Image 1 (tube, one colour):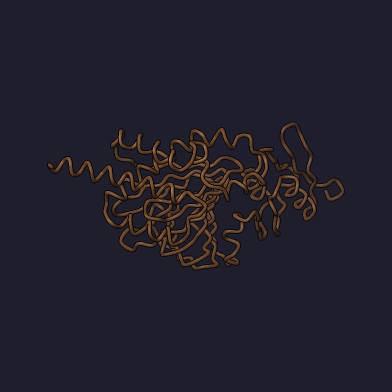
Image 2: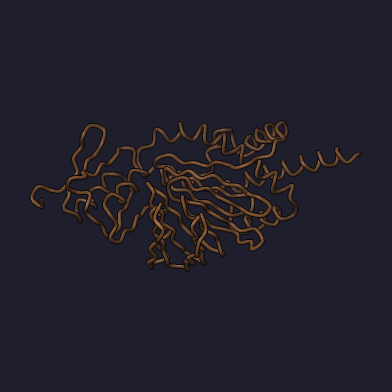
Length: 330
């Protein structure tokens, strides 16, 4: 057997194994031991990493096409939370894990092109968990868009919008970098959350530490567990404060926690969870600030909690809800 044939067989074998790993890790039964075993397979050779990247790229293309329609009819966080706990919809749609594996292999064995950046997205009210080729995880919240590139020297995620928790497999020789606007977050072995909405960036650390630096270069800010950085794009400075590390992933349990947050920020978050748009009356209520916990089980509950703690009222206007100051408090 000549060298080309051997390489082709090795490539096909890596693709088959990559598909099997993808299906296994998409299952709700996947545990930490499975992810550790997967990391060992990835590190066994560059052909494994390349094969898994291609599987992820194809899965992302299928998911973006079908996922948008599937979530369009979902209007409450109850369905959003149930989707977090089930097995990947792609396997169910195609008749189970075996059908998914077979379909992926058909596409992948035909298409031998290399995969550059892979785009992942969620719609309003939808969540999604992504496992990268190195075993790192991106747990995406509603209305979030990221693009991931796994290279030989660097792993990079371009953070377009939304919120996500990163659980990174630390590799000193191959740093993990998240670019969010004009800031870069470099993993130093950690679990951290990134939020980017309307030019406002927040980085919060649950475990370990990260380094945050201006994308154009400058002095890094190192965040430890329980620290949070807040930054407005275009400004030179950033603010750092301390929080309970449990707050970092609280949104994954259906709770949004705020401390002296502008009402406009709170509403921007709620608009990622629910399809009935909430509008803040700029003339009256936009200066309000909120401290507390919102249980985003449904939109009515979240708005009731806001109006109970702030001097505001909610008025339905067509297909939107407008918040403005209560007349007695103006």
